[in-house]
Amino acid sequence: MTDPEALHASLPPLAAIRARITHAAAIARRQVGDITLVAVSKTHPAEAILPLITEGQRVFGENRVQEAEAKWPALVEACPDIRLHLVGQLQSNKAEEAVRRFDCIHSLDRLSLLTALARAMDKTGRRVPLLVQVNIGDEPQKGGCAIADLPALLTEAGAADLPIAGLMCVPPAGIEPAPFFALLGKLAADHGLSGLSMGMSEDFETAIMLGATHVRVGSALFGARG
Ligand SMILES: *Cc1c(COP(=O)(O)O)cnc(C)c1O
Image 1 (tube, rainbow, N blue to C red):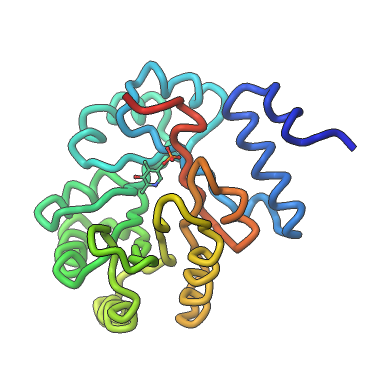
Image 2 (image 1 turned 45 degrees about the vertical axis):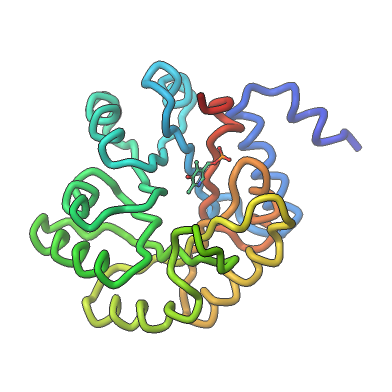
């Protein structure tokens, strides 16, 4: 059998990532169409993004509302089927801008933000799917809601009739991520949620094997961030 690593290494970055996603999905007996590649373009200029759009990539991730406001309107005007996902921490005072600009928000992590997002959705009439970011490694410096606080946050989201699409995590750096992906999957299943945003450049295949529906890949597509 051909060594998949060698095959993938000879492809351009987007084609290589797509091939690796397809390969991981096949091993896991999953439909590749159930996995969304979010191309995380933060810090990279429009010139770096355009080639991916040309190659057919349509879902992009940014981690700052301001940066997205500066970079994306022209690109989205040129290619209206682009979908933007917010993958970074969100301040409540930017909730309305975020709801107007993004098509999915992966970083709901606290009650004050939930309230702000509910208000922003009422005001704009836009219902943007939300993923609850969980601090899966219980790291003090990391964003995300504590595992213990997740049930209450989901209850509040239900009461506010917010469109909760699933859970998101960024596992602790430098250690094996699989147990954390598995734990996020269990938490999602416990709450009847199907969306799982997990896996980045270094570990998206592991995440796919453990049920990821959204992988957020930056540097493997765009190169290192400056
Ligand atoms: C930057 C970022 C990514 C992409 O990380 P890479 O390691 O460059 O693939 C994914 N998720 C979040 C939340 C990020 O901030």
